[in-house]
Image (tube, rainbow, N blue to C red; front, side):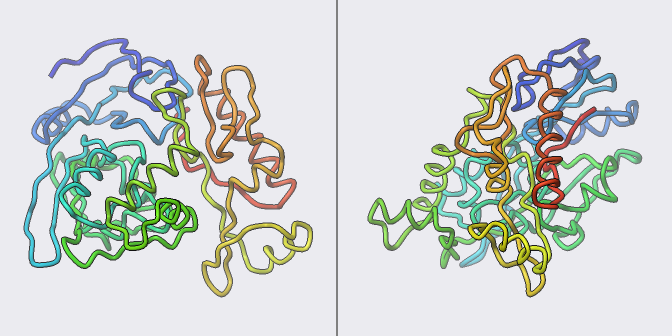
Length: 336
């Protein structure tokens, strides 16, 4: 393994923030990673770089997880169990599954990042969360170098959450994720209005998993900027979940406030709508701002610092709190 010095990380984060790694190494196998961990414990992990905002240079060893490979573990008449290694592109993996006729991930098309980071925040979109299909996660324990396995239950998945963001944070390097997908009798989720509208516009009444994937891609491309053209990390904030009582009070002042019922006592409110109401949608501050089509997305138009983007996020949080008495939680990892 070749440890390099003073490597720019602009190409390794989807925000396109230009900071440097004091030391940098790319690992392509579990064995390489285990050998590295015998010498290095204080490391900074980077994979697809899609869920982070870098605000400074990284002094610790940056380890780029580039472990590739997809394998079929077993299958029966209706189900197939597939393992994808951490360095695989998430979207390319989803497209491969769809092309093979394997269902379950089609609603998660075009989400940026790599396979290894998908369980950490339990990525989700259009009524589906990745936890719905994960059967196992394998990881290297940093302290011991041992390969360990987490069942779906042990991952403690929640809304944009998992054990890897809590008690296991900083203790493991995820190396592969195993999925249980369907070969027949696919359980298609087209209940989100945007998907229904997209399918309807194409006169598709009996959609395939590819139809759903194509619809999701079209929707996302129409609303979200391509990180290769405009630096961003997708949804920057989580959709807040508030009490029913709190929502009813807000409804009095804001009759058109949209919502999704979570339980008898909890309501989810779209963060993008909240941000739009306080006037930040499409607002630009020189080299950075809020995307014009999707208020959930903060963008780097080129040359912005992570610090400035984080300051914008804090300003949005403060204004949301003041206006709606809602604590807006950041979904992206802030590295500072």
